[in-house]
Amino acid sequence: MNLHEYQGKELLNSFGVRIQRGIVANNHKKAVEAAKQLATETGTDWWIVKAQIHAGGRGKGGGVKLAKSLDEVSTISENIIGMMLKTPQTPPQGKKVNQVLIAEDVYYPGENEPEEYYMSVLLNRATGRNMVMYSTEGGMDIEGVAEKTPHLIFTEEIDPLIGLQPFQARKIAFNLGLSGGALKEMIKFVTSLYTAFVKSDASLFEINPVLKTSDNKILAVDSKVVIDDSALFRHKDLAQLRDLREENEIEVEANAAGLNYVDLDGNVGCMVNGAGLAMSTMDLIKQSGGEPANFLDVGGTADAKRVETAFRIILKDPNVKAILVNIFGGIVRCDRVAQGIIDAYKNMGDAIKIPIIVRLQGTNAKEAKELIDASGLDVISATEFQEAADKVKEVLK
Image (cartoon, rainbow, N blue to C red; front, side):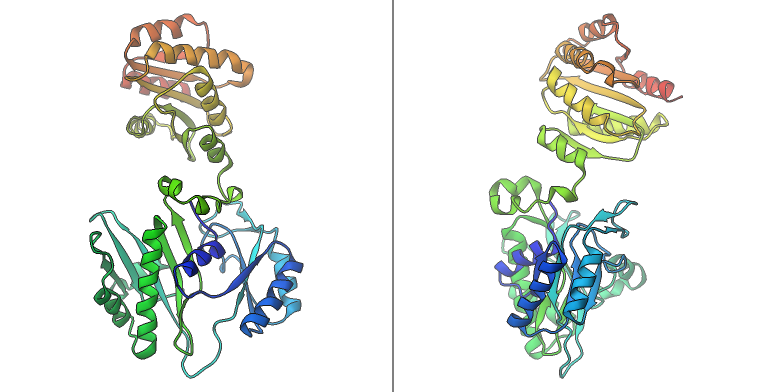
């Protein structure tokens, strides 16, 4: 589950991470009120107006602007709220901006020049350990830094049994070239950041940039926070932060129906029971000359209602030209699944106007094929994996 920048910052701040303070607003009048409040509380007389969408690269798309007056806060906010913001991480049509974050200006003059760093906490899947990834090249795309100057990216792996150790936090601060008060601030920042990551069951914390201000404070100017969906039952407060407006509508509907669904860009819909079989089915479609339009795991049950819901969700994608149903009857009997498909097909009437290939294998597979063949419906049955692949290839032609 992705959080907005302002939500991520609030979470970080609750664990003692120093942040760039800001107030969220959903119209230009509230944005001005937020700017006035920040001026009173922090003394800032410039403000950063930031579009709040679940995507990076907002500045390049025109979603982050500096306002030097309250009039500019109003004008910029009015222009950003409601716009379709396009960045490298949004769909081609962009994402609609529903709110902005009015943030204090933290690049104020002082004895030293402000410096930007990159820092993230995530799982190293190769070792099964969490790690802190960091760089002196903050404010830039980390992918570009990795490609052009990989020696400027550092990692620190954390032993899961003992957690982040003080010497590791000091090492990170030293590698960033810090000393004196800034070094102490960074040690505290890293320690609090890692604690927040573990305690909130996050899968990613990314702060770009982490800023050393002109008076040596260390704070998070941005935040990208991803919470592990599987752990949300432990974090009811975080689950309430989910912004469904930012998520794929079909995926939201499927999740509400208890279906594991991921929307893809292909032309062949998949309905499968079991994640492993679903992945194999996607490979099968690819080898048959098609492209999978989705990942859909209906789980251990496939009654008529569940199958009908799955069909309706798949058919919401106008790019789908055929549907492949691939069910292994282990826990559930194939003949019951076949009857569920027949009932769902009849209930949907004329809603299904594309070919459906059904492969049922396992308990009572023979009886299931007979039911499908005798139904009189426009459903193509298959028994073997290769047979299903051939049928997919035929209907696509």
